[in-house]
Image (cartoon, rainbow, N blue to C red; front, side, top):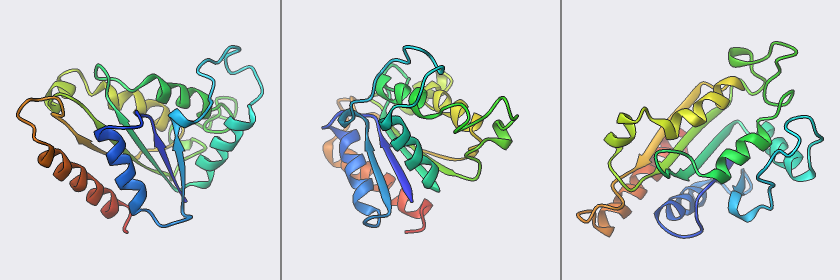
Length: 187
């Protein structure tokens, strides 16, 4: 199985990219986790000292059942959207994704062996993101690595807000990224 975790708006280039990706996936072989269509709590009111909600349990089970996770999101100020950060907080749960008690973290993380494809969009050029230390990727990398996930591919579509960027180029870039996802998944 594949889990597609989408953390963007319900329209625009990032949404189009998300739609293109899920349309390429085999039917009934993926979980579609559109974060804006969940009623996920944004806050861990009691930290990690609480019981999992049924929704958290469902999403964690979907991740655990998936060999590949695909994260699709826009960068806001070189960072991930708050809804995606909340998803990480809600699902990369102690004793499910990693365990400090049993020393099962990083290379021994509970989700080791999974593959991840990260796809992000941004208004400006990728060089600005790199100059800022790739924060929109690094924020994702730490929880993935802590959970044992090191097989990570990163794709992006940039320059979306530049006046010189024509819709035809954006569409071409979206299709090129989708083709790369298909290749990474051997579809």
